[in-house]
Image 1 (tube, one colour):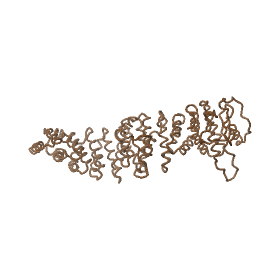
Image 2 (spheres, rainbow, N blue to C red):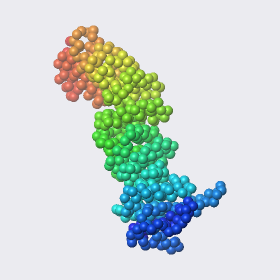
Image 3 (cartoon, rainbow, N blue to C red):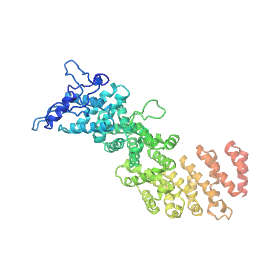
Image 4 (cartoon, rainbow, N blue to C red):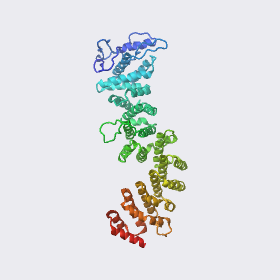
Length: 576
């Protein structure tokens, strides 16, 4: 077989040593007597022919049933400060060793594979060289030989060599394979997937890739290679089970990496982001990270999370320079809705990251923390007072993004029943944000106030009094999103407080409604479709609450621009 399927590959180095000579070299390096190998069963006839090339010695496989042991790739260096450099002959011997070892493993079961791996490790350690250097040569040999091996048992046997090495030296194998295949490569992908299918080593390899990803902050090339390798491994069905114990950590690392890449997206050297409409595999770093994240979620049963992100445009937001945190919030919401079995682990991993000095890690953790507050069991992991104090502290941060996340967090916390009793803590922060200059902050505050109103025992009277001086100016705000949110908040306030609207003119909510009617009528033809639609909805709530019976006229004005209907509305309102 060494002269057939396992013959020399095109362009691959072919060593000049036979396995017998390699074994004798190992014995000599250990001070053991050399001699013929122990008797044992003879090899199969197909393994007997030697492979000869012009100018090279014949190579024959070793006899005996024991797995072969690799010899020293070169003569021991003389004592002294000078060391003999690695030569191409040594690399050729190691490449041959990988192929011949795979040939011997073809008929071996698990025990034989284990024995070969241990023998190989012992042989490499006996040379006095760094083991990772030897593993690097073996991986190079496999990368060179695998493309030329026949499909089926020969190729599977070669891939088992890699798994055998990874069983004892997973760190060296991972880093050697990362260094050998930084660019997209079909053979490297096959090697990563073969490691993923081996349940005895895939967990170790995934951990090493995670550490490689964490330790490659200064090297985009190493981070890209590790990300691509993770994507290949996680795409294998059933591999995600090997991430048990560090799944939340891996998910957060991938999402944080997207934040780091999004910050550099404005660089002219950054590749164009791959989107699902493009054909072919992803090429940019961000695209590879998104694919690895999808594979992680899908393999763990989170296909609905992936679907929700696609429908909401979450993946595009995750890779966007100014929208990454919005994508994180969408991902957290999807996890709360469809993959709540990892929320406790995520919450535990997030808490230390909230104090990180790295902006990408800290802000990503803050966005996840904010989104997970929508889950009642998760929010109960900390005392309510601790969460509120943290969110209030964010309101004093000089960075607008932190204040924005704090406002969203207050709104999410208000969704949980029983949290309205903290209205004295929630409302001052939310009402104070209505005067912010950033529209995102104002929108977040208006949205959070609306969530407070949706809860049982909402403080309608208190909010009516507090919003009366603050809300009317926002109905005429120049920012479209602020106008639409302010109109919607007024409609929600009217719907919750409709029972007390006819008690008297001194009621603050009635005064707020009467003060806002003319701006609402004008907003029926607002250039912003969202504001116009929200105004029509809010006017309908006001009509129902006040029992005016003007709904038909309002709809006519909104959709047909009827002067007659508008005249009737104004006439009846002036009478009232």
